[in-house]
Amino acid sequence: MEDVRTRRGADIALDHHLVVANLKLKLKKNWTSGQTAIQRFNTAFLRDTDRLNEFKIALNNRFQALQDLLKEVETTMEDKRKGIKEALTLTCQEVLGLMKHHHKE
Image 1 (tube, rainbow, N blue to C red):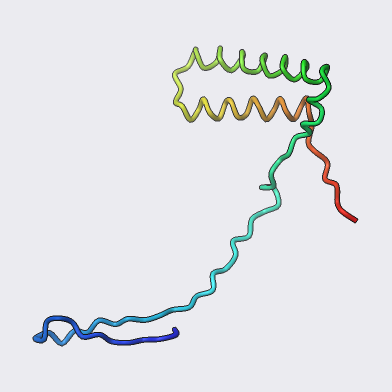
Image 2 (image 1 turned 90 degrees about the vertical axis):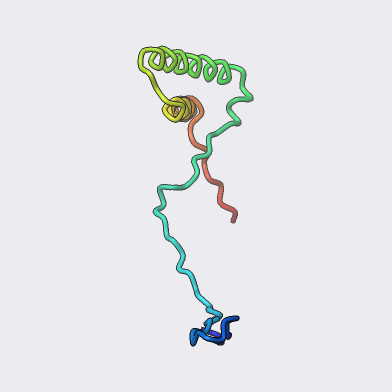
C-alpha cells in the first residue's frame, strides 16, 4: 500500500467515511508448457510446382472428405471451423513439414 486517505461524504449525519487507497502489486508471470509453441510450416516448398500440386491435391481430398462428413451430420459453425483447421494443419504437416529453427551464432 502506498497511500491511504479518508474522505468525508456529502451527508453530515452519517459517520461513514470513504477510504481511498493506492496499491502497488506485482503480478506473477503465468508459465506455460513448451508444447504451446507456434508451429511454422516450411512454406518455401510451395515455390516448387511439384510440391505445390501435391499440396493442392492433398488439401482438396481432405476438404472433399470433410464436406461429405459434414453433410451427413448436422454440425455447428465451431465444428466446421475446427474441421477446416485440422484438415489444413494435417495437410501442411504431411506435405510441407515443419520449418527448422536456425539459431544465430
